[in-house]
Image (cartoon, rainbow, N blue to C red):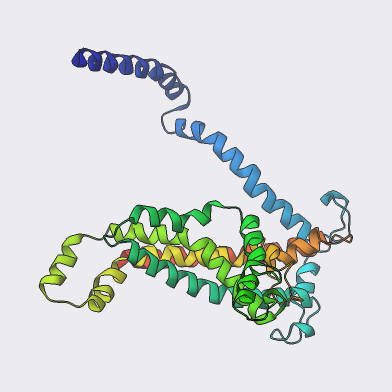
Amino acid sequence: MAIKASALLERLVEGVMSLVEIPINALERLMGRKRVPYLFLAPNLVLFGIFTFLPIAISVGYAVTGGTNLFVTDRPFVGLDNFRQLLSCQDYSRPGTCQESLFWTAIWNTFWFVGFNVVATLLVALVTALILNRAMVGRGFFRAMFFYPVLLSPVVIGLIWKWFLDRNGLLNAFFEMMGVPPHVFLLEVGWARFFVVLVSVWFHMGFYTLILLAGLQAIPKDLYEAAAIDAASRRRTLFAITLPLLGPNLLVVLILLMIRSVQIFDEAWVLTNGGGPGTANSFIVQYIYQMAFGSDLRLLGLASAASVLMGVVLLALTLVQLRLARKTEEI
């Protein structure tokens, strides 16, 4: 009976495929074999163009226009004036000397955040992946738990940690039980910056751990067996086998981390009440949001110019990734 059912299923599949071939062959005769794939790609290409290239073009249009009108056609053309206003500065290391001091404050805040966040997240994700790659009880459970925060909304993450770190939050309640006076962590610059990085690492490290774990599992076990026969230490095995073969995955994680870190906004905005204390945690995306939507005077030109500059930086990071990946393949 099982053999008859299998044969019947095969005939059914063959019949369906024969029916599908009829319109495909007709399209090939009408359009040519090489053009048919583009017909199937057309819907996705149209959607991609509408939701990707069209917004980029509109953003560039706003960046070269001025005024406060909403529609691009109602805005006067100003050329590169918005870019000049953003880049006009006597000393770039001192945002107070710049025409748009908030923009350069956000730039420097983003730089320090990217530096600390990339290094911390990469190290934590690598160590976590190395641990989870070993044989251990409940390995599947721990893998799922480390990845679980990635599934949550950034706003939810910000609210959870804000409740935890607030003056009347869970952490201060624990301190009071221990006889330690409460501390307002999010109102001090040092602590606020530390916890912004900590929350970002906790939130995103599961995703990068998964990428590194996939790379670790792709390394042939024979290499580790040969190293064990040669009595190689764990440290030498790590630096001679694991890290070199994990190089492509580390490169992908590094570039993705840099791009994601430049775009930090949601969780930091919620956690620090809009970038506080003061402008200590005001980042580039927050500046774009504030210029475009955060006040009654909507400076869409400045916001779009800043977003174009950020897009150029992200494009440069992507090109660096492709360049380094190509060199890695050649080696």
